[in-house]
Length: 194
Image (spheres, helix red, strand yellow):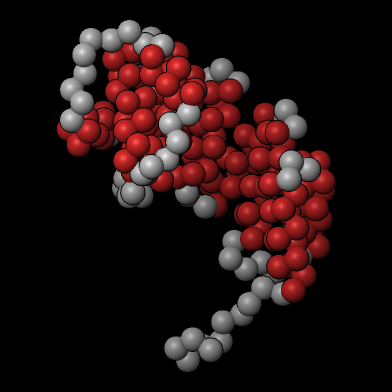
């Protein structure tokens, strides 16, 4: 009981589906994840903690892994209409980038980075990296370089591994020297994202 109210908890069955589908996705058993998640949505009538949306998201991410990009996009678009979360927009931006719709990917990436304020910028490092790749594709190399540089700097400041791919991306762009003051650079990029 919480402050005089009874809080209804998820059933054992709902918890089982939640854990099972999460494990299937993480293990790369995508077709099975689609089947079990679909069964959960069909079988359960009362969802807690937005589990219906989490099941639908796992279906979409599994479809992406199985090569059904349009199915993944349709699923994530439907989820986003119900739950406006920046990471869903990020996943959509990634899908549009993968299918070559650079303009839509760019629009969604900017929406994702601006949603819910900036919050902890470390949480949005993946979207900053995607924006950098989009800008590189659009031949906007100075801006792309600044984004790759911010990704590298954030990783270094948090003692995260700077991957070989990060370095390849950073070194693949020939640009004029850039101001290396990270806070100034991040401020400049936040203005750009808006």
